[in-house]
Image (cartoon, rainbow, N blue to C red; front, side, top):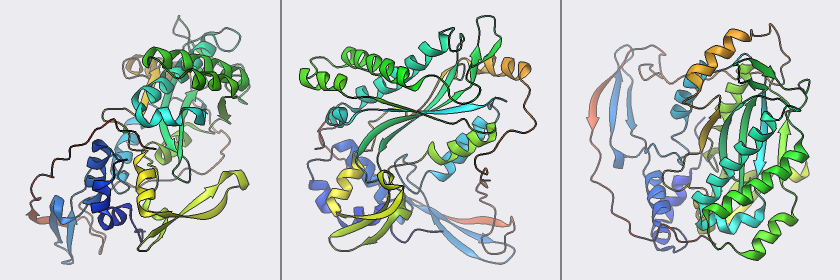
Length: 378
């Protein structure tokens, strides 16, 4: 169902003020500009006709930006289809690594260093426990997905990790974790190792870090959250379908827009997931949304270990040969079937008889925006 309001509505409404807003850097402004004109005549499009029922449709091109609420569906389906053949016939665990809010200000102007350190420290932590004979004694793998937002669009950097319940020994033998399916590794121990590794890696990436901030990092309890394992490998695909190409806010969460205020829906996780609404001034909404536009070139979905792009062509066939899928595993939710988009399907008569009869060219190139890309958002 199409959303009533869109992020693009706010951008078009306030664009003059957004362009003059100094707390948004040039890369963020370029991204917002793309979202603003997504699926409008500014990007061109095509006119389609159904040769069966005669229905005409005009479709405008998308901006294809990874931060756009309207451009993630097709990309998600493509990505999931590639992962389908890579699924192992084993259980998978869901582990979440969260950075303390002490690092939020640093993440605003050193995002690449802060988030790269998060990826590396999470994998290093898992590797240490996996290699330990007390826990596994093998090399495991990980699919990690970076999210930076909370429900109210505040900065909340955390890493969702999908980890198989075992690994390959040096002799290329599959070995399962010794946990009887309840947890991956001890969470409290992982939290301490994660904190130590993250601080060490961050120091190597950023020189002259604030002394008081570094002291505060060791005063806080860091959070590593391990959820129960997925019931079947197919449920991993279901989960990835929800989270891999998710952005800070979907258009459906926008409840109303007036001349000054935008109202968004959110879940209050501190009060039993109660559904609530939040009012924000237009520029404040844009500022919060912009905090989650990642730096150019930063990869937000990464694969490690036996699931890395260099290893999986060899490791996946070896594991599938040794591990046979169980006939029935407990299910914690029903997998959702996601139908791929079919450009030939007529939305009216539901037959594959749609053809393109006219191509509408896009307008000229966008105006060059010059602004400091490293300006801090406060």
